[in-house]
Length: 482
Figure 1 (tube, one colour):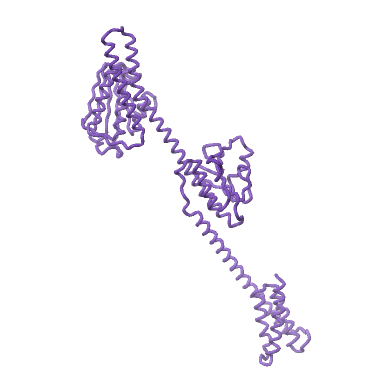
Figure 2 (figure 1 turned 30 degrees about the horizontal axis):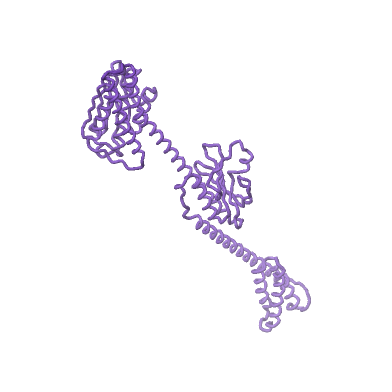
């Protein structure tokens, strides 16, 4: 309690004493009237100590100046009662005043916290997305935005993924947007970065820099901590801001990581598709051409048949050149038009002519209905499935004929059947899709292409031939005519 409060208590009692001297002729026996305001005022604004001092001084002043015999400190029963009443009034008023001050202080703190929360929400509202950039560039932009929100000089983030042992580190500035990796064996650095725990002040970052504040984050697949360097002011009001910003940084980093992983998966799947299409297309045709060249090597030079074979090989190479050009055009990001009526039948007939010339064996093709139209990617998939099934038969079964049947059933599903009279598969009987997967009996590329279109594959094999049947169910994503 300050000395001014005690001095005010003395002054208040002195003023009450003087006022009582001046007004005593009109006050009668109510000599305590002017001392109650003095005690109440001191208790209200000065607290317990000054209030008790004012109480004692008031009782002594009344006893000395106004209670007979005057100018003596003879304390009687009336003086003791008066002192007790003054003390009770002073204590009660001091308690009420203290409670009022506590309530005002609590209200003021609540308003300050509300103002700080509103300021924090205003800063982090409209948090942008960074999924349009790569992981490194997006992380750098993200951390630069976090530094602008907090108002600090630099932000460094360190995190780890649930399925990788590395500790990744990115920062808001630098010569180029890069993400560093700390190996699992670098225990000294890793132990210096506590990814758990609450917000901290005056900590050390993952690269040894002094950070003014840091806060952890933990999302579905990532866990880490964000370090803020050069914070303009540190204190209790900084904690909620850095916690919210760290949480937003964690969410954005996870979005960037998921986007980056999806891009990698898309590239990997596209490479698999390109490899499969090359295997089923150009590679199969080149295999047939190689077999014809081997057959020519066994013939005598000078015969007319050799020239016919060479012309057939030249035509096959020209056809494969066109196929390769069309395949390259398909890789360009241009929309494919829907298949035209009868396009599938014409494509299979052209395939029949080419394979018959390459393998010197008859192939029959039937499409029902003849004007069947499929979506462009489904049409390409059916053509390549038929091609691979037929070429596999020529290479391994050595048939005298191959028949192809494509039929749309009543429920608008599609059935593709390729049969031959060769040696059949190593197994005997009929195997459905799941059994073929478990036994690895079906050609892998053919099965993957069937599964890509949502279909199923079954194979029936006997010593006198085999039958490959593909069933493509009705799909809402296909052309309206299929």
